[in-house]
Length: 177
Image 1 (cartoon, rainbow, N blue to C red):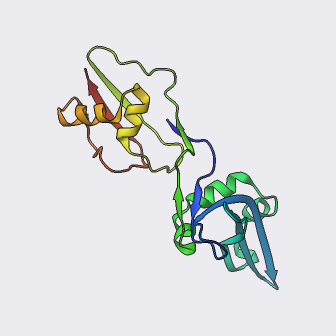
Image 2: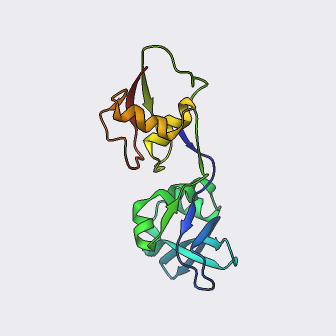
Image 3: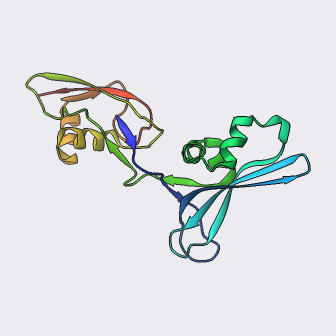
């Protein structure tokens, strides 16, 4: 299983310096204007510390917002931060991308040994983390990426999905030794 270890880095240009990397602070700012509500997720530049606001809610009627969401916003729920960063609508609205380098780990459940014969493996993602399947196979079995690429080309590593590029959804593969 691919499991996140921390929040990803937010890729967005900083208005104060040349950096393009922000860390989510885990704090929200909620502003009410009569019956309309705005909510932002605050992020800090990794170089200069400048704060940027990522729009979560914009001019929403208070009655149209679920009470549990409003409660989570007011209490700076860290789980909500992770959910919102993975929400494609929030990412598109704020024109951001996520950098998942060093923000995930592969949990093999203790079985990383190659056996004689074929082994069927199912890979599950706890969050939508884009990772190259070749990298997952290499880390899971203690192989080099070049060796995994060789196994793919000679047909010893097969899958119903394409193993090149990045995937963020569950898939399965068979490794023949």
